[in-house]
Length: 194
Image (cartoon, rainbow, N blue to C red):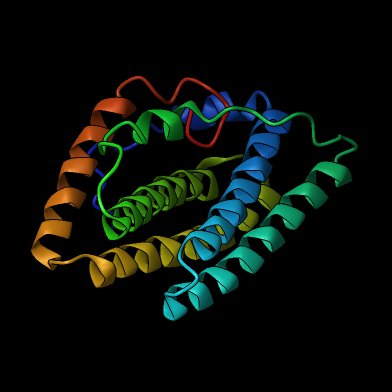
């Protein structure tokens, strides 16, 4: 369903289990960045009413996910910690050339967001199936479903705003191939995309 070309090695969960605090901190900031992305789309494209509505709902949901992850951190006696740079997202954003029309930029940003959500969904599925902590299994199962909806939403919007659905689908396919190359170096850190 997600279209990912290279699945995460299941042993990634073993890395995560050695530092739950780190994965939760990274996850919290992923949720915060997702809310920020939704807000930035509202600011950049206020004339696109359907996009504004969808991103308003998404920003609220992502912020509520941040709050849930933060609560898990507090319940375990930890503090949030400092923001981590997401090298995966940085590297992913190198795929599409800078510039182009506003609509091209929007479509590219929506495709990036769809892929980030798809990879998060896939990682949450692994955690929901394999992590020893039962509470985290349930938590990640619930969030996996949300991430799948977000992935679908971003992909639908990219196809809607793109000039030509065939062109958008070709860009999506090429981005998936590029991401699979990035993933050959990932799965070695206790981060959502690491």
